[in-house]
Each structure stands twice: as structure tokens, then as C-alpha cells.
Length: 384
Ligand code: ATP
Ligand code: MG
Image (cartoon, rainbow, N blue to C red; front, side, top):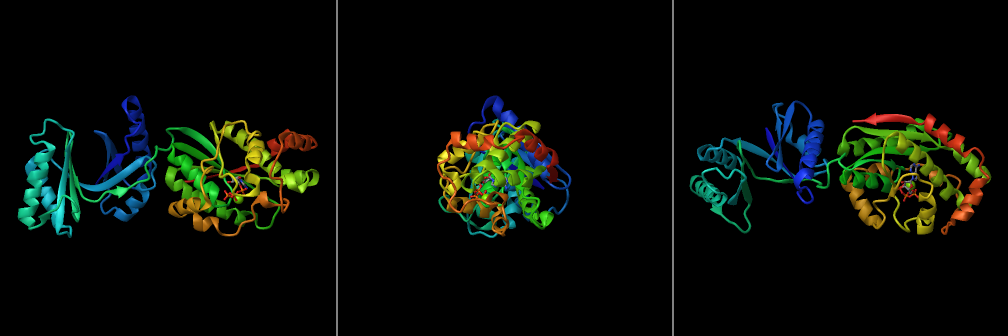
């Protein structure tokens, strides 16, 4: 079985295009189950699936989650010979239900005997006469597409949409501050879609009851996100030690900001160990009290890597729409006591001032030791 895979070509000219294609081909090869081969051919990628009876639905589910793919189609391969192309298109058309159709041919192989409009006319005539179907160039029930390349031709009908974007890994690596909420899984997806490989970092209060069972929600989210990038690392960081100190020493209205400043310091450490070049969060301006611009400013200043909040200008409804599409929404809405919401004020500070915060944090002794302990005690899990 052959699959013709197209990517969006914008920004992928010259040398970049080879790097892009190679990375995308590699990601596809790693994602497809069973025995297969992935080739780069004239501005597209051809996957050949050897396992007989690979379930098409399963393959669609996999390919539609690979960043970098604009669309893909299950295709018939034909020899570079119009007689073989005719034979294959009749077989394909015979298996489909339609009354009107069009043929759209493209030819990257300029030495092929016919040009693309001649190919379209020849094949259109053939289907019209042999199968008694009507040509409709405006609103056909079915469009047959023929791509004539250097070594072979491919024929297909349906195009399955992909998510476009850039192949994971091409933009480097980032660590995501992943809570159990709706937003940060969406932020992770947005980062992967821009070619970042993400390492997920979750902080949890390890003294509350049912630790492992509680973090199973985070594992489920990691499992869903792994469908977009393959092998995914999740670091679970015990946070109760730091929380205890903060609860003891910091007034309730400042705790949220200071929790998150410690998270930023720890994530920065993990990021450096992982050779990541940025931190991704699920923040969106003004969504909750902690997410005012002054507060985000104070929180992000504690990071040692650039902080990227991909949802910064999005409305909650837009974020929820994406969460549903990527399959994390239903997991996210199950109840979970996020450690961030632990012992904070009903009306937390919305206008955090860095000098206030630095003064308050000054009272916390051994900051470094607390941070080191968290990094050391964090547990890594891998999802494929
Ligand atoms: P989300 O839906 O992602 O939880 P939210 O609207 O609930 O977002 P907050 O709980 O204030 O907002 O969290 C804002 C951001 O802080 C999250 O998107 C995430 O990046 C980070 N964050 C919060 N809690 C944690 C946590 N326990 N572990 C890691 N990161 C966290
Ligand atoms: Mg949250």
C-alpha cells in the first residue's frame, strides 16, 4: 500500500527543504506501525506500507497527528506508461461510487510523453466512456489525481487533511510546564506544531492522598501528546517541600506567584539538563487572577530560558476547541487538585511587583538546596 504525503511548502525552499523533508520522513517512519519504507520524492513523501491489510483507519489516525503533513492520500502506483496509468485509474474508479468526476494531473517528470493537461483529458475521456460517468470540473463528486514523477506515477482520490506546521524536532527542544488543566496540553501541541520537541514537566503535591493515582491524569495527557511527537518524556516533580516553606513564610495573596517562580527555576534546571532552549506555558493573558501581565512578568523573570506562552492571545473557547480536537479535553476536565491552587488566597495579588516579591522571597533560606532537591527527586517516565 502506498501513501502520498504532501507538506506545506511555504518557507521550505532550497537547503531548508531537504532538512525539513528528511526530518518529516524520519518522523513518519518512526510513527508508522509494522514494516514500511518512507521515501522523499519530488517535493512529496511516499510511504510504502508492506504489512498486508494495515488498517486504513489506524494509519489515518496516526498520519493526521504528525506535524508537518499538510495532507495525505492512499494511492495506487503505476508504471511510467500511459497504458498502465489507464489500467490503474479504471480499477480505482471502478471501486468508487460517484456520478460526476474530474481528473487533475500533475507532472514533475517533464520527459513523460504527455503534459499534465493531456493526461487529464486522456484519462477523463477513458472514465467517461468506459464507466459512463459525467465530467464536472466545477463540483465533481470525485476528483482523480494523478502525479507523474521520475520513477513512477501515483493515482488517488481523497485527500486526508493533516495538521500542517513543522516536523517535530526541526526547531529544537522546549520544556513544557504542564498542569492538569485544559490549557497547558494545548500549549504543548502548539509548540510541537511549530517543530519543537517537548519534554513535559509536572509539579505535584506529593503529600496529598493517592499520589500515583492522582498523577494518572497527567500520564493520560502525556500519552495523548505523545501521539504527535512519538517518544515523550514526562518529569514528575514533587513540590510539597517548597510549598510547605512558601505556605509558612509567604502571605497567601503572593503564594501563587512565588509557587510559579519556583516552578520556573526548577524547569530552567531541567531544561538545561535536557539541552532545551525554551520553556512553554499554558498562560493566556487575563484568564485567571495569576495571569495578569505584571504577574506573568514576575513569574517569567525567574526563568533562565526564554518563556513561550503560545496561548497568550487566545480566548478560552478557542483553547477548548483545540483541546477537543487533540483529544486532551475530556482528560483535562476530570477533577484534579492542582498544586498551584493549594493554599492560595481567594483574591490573589493581581499586580505583582518584583521588588515586593524579591523581598518576600529573601526570607526563604536555602532556595538552591530546595530547588536541587526537587530536581533530584523528580521521576522520569517515557511515553511512546
Ligand atoms: P491550565 O489549564 O494549563 O492548568 P490554568 O488556566 O488552570 O491553565 P493556572 O493553573 O494558573 O492556569 O496555570 C497557568 C500555567 O502555569 C499552566 O498553563 C502551566 O503552564 C503552569 N502550571 C500551573 N500548575 C502547574 C503544575 N502543577 N505543574 C506544571 N505547570 C503548572
Ligand atoms: Mg491549572
